[in-house]
Image 1 (cartoon, rainbow, N blue to C red):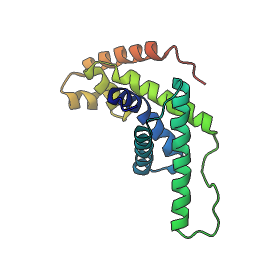
Image 2: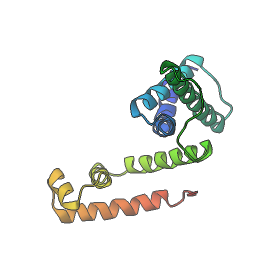
Image 3: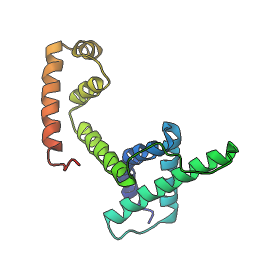
Image 4: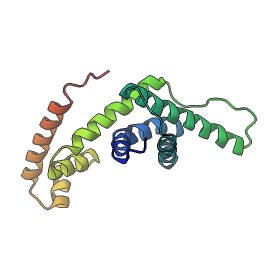
Length: 166
């Protein structure tokens, strides 16, 4: 109820996975971010109380899903379509998307816990840069990049090893 630090923690924990979840429906980064932000504004203004973490999580994902469906419906009305139907181009269930978003969040959080230099190496590598390109970008030797990458991936495996991958 108005606790800014608690709200900030909730926002930081759920913002990225909720955006990923919304993107599955909207296939648009900007609209996905807008929907998630609107849900957080509603949460802040409502001062809702939750009995446990699971109830909060369920509320957020359900609210985002419903907001996405409303966004899709409103977009269809604006386009003057003749028939309103759920044309979501996906084969997975909401639970699968929620699990996927959670996994992305866990990986993202594990990368955030790396040292700044290791984090940059991993992010550049994930963006498709070669070791040489990363070395040039960071102004270090290729061997330094190889060492940082090897240590970073080892740390990530250790941090994420306990997750139950479904």
